[in-house]
Amino acid sequence: MTELSLIRNFSIVAHIDHGKSTLADRLIQMTGTVAQRDMKAQLLDSMDIERERGITIKANTVRIEYPAKDGKTYILNLIDTPGHVDFAYEVSRSMRAVEGSLLVVDASQGVEAQTLANVYQALDAGHEIVPVLNKIDLPAADPDRVKQNIEDVIGLDASDAVPISAKTGLGIPEVLEAIVTRLPAPQGDRDAPLKAMLVDSWYDPYLGVVVMLRVMDGVVKKGDRIRMMQTNAVYGIDKLAVLKPQMVDIPELGPGEIGIFTASIKQVRDTKVGDTVTHERKGTEEPLPGFKPSVPVVFCGLFPVDAADFEPLRDAIEKLSLNDASFSTEMETSAALGFGFRCGFLGLLHLEVIRDRLEREYDLDLITTAPSVVFKLYMKDGEVRDLHNPADMPDLTLIDHVEEPRIKATIMVPDEYLGDVLKLCQDRRGIQLDLSYAGQRAMVVYDLPLAEVVFDFYDRLKSVTKGYASFDYTISEYREDHLVKMSILVNDEPVDALAMMVHRDRAESRGRGMVEKLKDLIPRHMFKIPIQAAIGGRVIARETLSAMRKDVTAKCYGGDASRKRKLLDKQKAGKKRMRQFGKVEIPQEAFISALKMDD
Ligand SMILES: Nc1nc2c(ncn2[C@@H]2O[C@H](COP(=O)(O)OP(=O)(O)OP(=O)(O)O)[C@@H](O)[C@H]2O)c(=O)[nH]1
View (tube, rainbow, N blue to C red):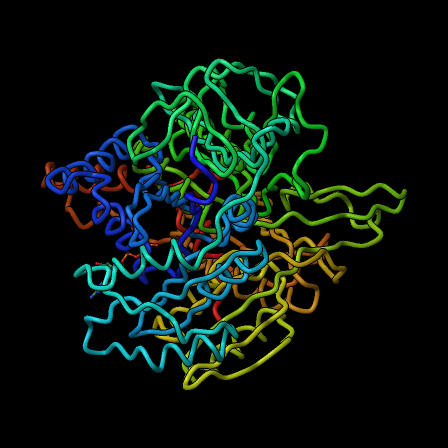
């Protein structure tokens, strides 16, 4: 057990690519936590295992021993927080497990949207903050400008910011001293009942569920029986360890300490980030305040291209959800796409990560239906329903009104692109809340409907700003708007996977856009195909795909058999990515492309 005054707990907050991982590696290396010659091998090893097992090894969560200039040896606990906005709630909880943060800002770039979002969370958690200016080895680095930028945009005193190069190692000793001298030691009472926060958890195929915790009060030992206060589940601790970054067993953890335990827990779902862990007997009465579970906000359907892949898809989804409590799934049947799953995600990135893993690691060909948010339906009979799938929208006459989730989005962008960004936000039904400048960069804050952002907002933002904008958001509230379900009919039959919720005022233009695109995306058939967009029974847009005249094999003159076969094989391969719908074949890209909005 370590004396409180010799412990420092911290996290690193940064915008993506500003050097958070490089700095963490450097801190580990400089303190000899991993022997110099093992450094590369070891960190790479754990990454290989990570890839191999498909699990997250918390490479950036580490306990470091640091002999400081004052002659004492300190324990520094660095905890890694998920970097993306989708996990904002979990980040904000895990921030409460530490007392301070290093704020890393790229000295050649300055403050970006995620710098802001992350630093605000650290400030909310009551952190002491040490600004660190990274990449000063770059010719473009301008530490003085970026110091000023931190003061202007964040309002944080940056006069004592530590200039470093995580790449060359310059300034790392100063960072270690700053952690000891400028960040506060934790507080806690060793004699009080056990109160610990569940900071993170992950599934390890060999150990089962691994739980990371931060002890606030009391002492936890190997063999103890503990209770999770939210779920009321009781477990016996099998293994208690600290991460250096490899697991090293430890007999007990006292106040201020951070470590991991295993306890024959089956699913990550049973461990809720932010929950309070106490002893089964003589535990604390009072859980840590402010617990709330994270809820999925973006839903989409995942269907196998080949119906025979349904079982493999089910297995893969089960495996992935073992390690991801925030990914929810249920079976879904679609007239157009057959059997699949309706899946819920914390946000768009979360969706992309899961879909990519299913396709890459499990080698599945998937059709993803348009992402949709959860709408709240206020029915005339007083009931309130959550609508996860536009295809399930009840008859309009039964509904009093519909509410949709809104977000508060912060976008930072160089001046010259501001006009395009404002137009993009305006086109997506945005309401401007704030506009300010820091040097050449503008910061705009918009209130936007999440539904308008879930599809291709990031892509559009990137392309109109040539990649120079940074973006971050938080969900703000549900609000009423005039929202209706738009159906798409191909050859007079509704294609449920293409149904979507739209704002009434935009329905015509969206419908027209959709049918025009579908006309290009659906190959011609031997007959004419009407493509329509409709609201209720009323058609709001219509296109007709004319019939094909020639047989594709006709130009083979019937003579060259091998060529003819090749052509047919090619068609067959193409078909793999097609879905038969009634008499019409719709290629899978139609389901995605048709929904992209062109502004
Ligand atoms: N020139 C220079 N490059 C650096 C320095 N620190 C980090 N980099 C580079 O910047 C890039 C991003 O660094 P990372 O440490 O991966 O950044 P990160 O913030 O952890 O990014 P994510 O892991 O993607 O969130 C890498 O290519 C690094 O090699 C530095 O001090 N100088």
